[in-house]
Length: 188
Ligand code: FES
Image (cartoon, rainbow, N blue to C red; front, side, top):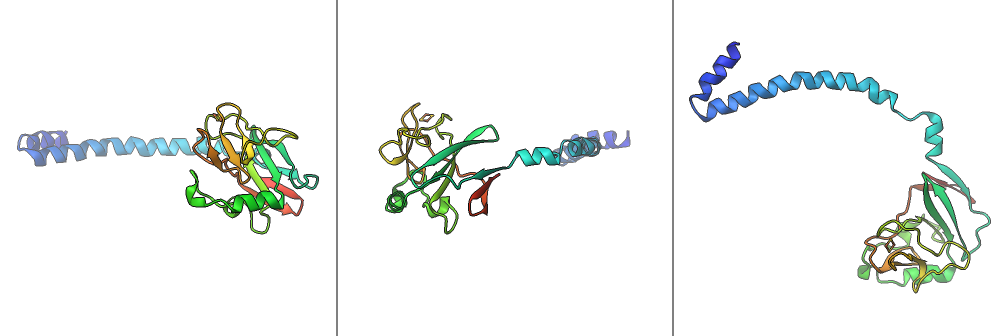
């Protein structure tokens, strides 16, 4: 009660009173917020993923059967992923591009793992509006840059899956992954 009277008194005397009143109001809000955090903690803790859910967040893919020039599609977190074994020529084509001319400048080396530049692993999701580009399946149209071609609105990706022409703003996304053996890739 005393605090309210003090605030009204100061308010009548100008700006300083206004600031003091704001401070008092903020103090009143701070205590219930602390209580809310304490209540939320057990709820958030309960929502932490269990071990089996975490396992689903990662997949192991056998790449031993993918020959140079071939690619496969798999599904990870309900989205398509392309795993492609680039030929020496496709690597050469990707490295011959002046990166500064690209819409989303990245080298092939930045999009692959050291010593494994032939393994191009990307999401199979066009960065324009999310269609699945062609080019990973046998005999599919890879477009004029030899990588992937999105049939929805004509985005064209090169052999490093970088956007070269069409409306897509970004390169095909490279997901988190690691080689767990020379022939196994763990995605996620
Ligand atoms: S969704 Fe691929 S070009 Fe539009």
